[in-house]
Image (tube, rainbow, N blue to C red; front, side):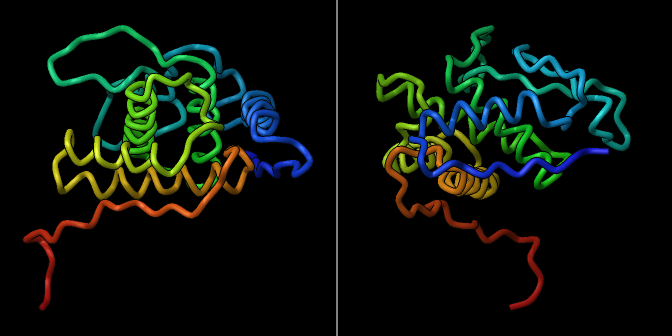
Length: 189
């Protein structure tokens, strides 16, 4: 059974201190993906905790940067973004369990890519709405239109979680600019 972890930021602390507390809480107090999870590993085997019907394959979360199609890389995300991404994945799975974790991870990878483009350090507390706008743009450039809305929604959830947890130095209102694409599978006028 998974114990629900709800992080409450300390308003007296700045965003960097809240980030360290958030990561520490998710590392030490959360049992999402198991108590024996090696939080520091760059690849998490979560097969025992996510049951996907009709598949016998191993389910893994890889904390690597977003790579271009056809380019193989063994690189991993830089700190402190990598620890934030791991903590976020564990935290969100506790709050909103999902069997499809890839969309959360892709949104985090796209956000990491936007930070890398800016040439800034990989400190998530320094993220601004401009970084999230650029991330949405990258998603629309690299992903099919039918999937980009889903990743944009995950990006919006990342922003909301960071703002609620006091992880942003300058929190502001932000909404994903990615619009849902009308597809042929809808019924009705």
